[in-house]
Image 1: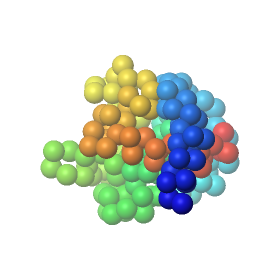
Image 2: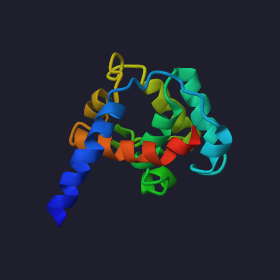
Image 3: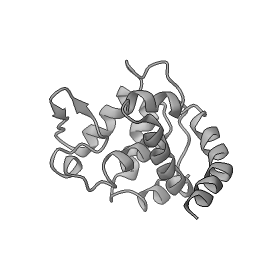
Image 4: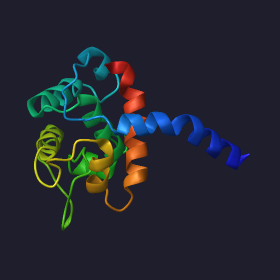
Length: 151
């Protein structure tokens, strides 16, 4: 049974995943803030949209990364360090004064080294999560699918 489920997922799900991951995330796509607001913590739909607009990136991708990296905005890093984007320093989890600051910082970071010049989710995954980029990409794509109704 288990192998049948895996084969079905590979046969039907993988082509869609591969296509979505190869689109450029460096295009701001308009999103309905009211619909997005229903899927993120209260008041943050506009924050994600504005950070994405300022940095010309897809707001849904920015939210998807945040949702995955912060454990649906409930992880210890999200709650205690205002780190909603899973950002690290060489000393551990990066601390921010506010969660908004972490969102804007990550959006800006996606346009700098080491991300500059990498335009697809596949390319982004190998940098954002070098230890397991395939799993990271699949998780972000799950979030993107969950959020897709908010466009």
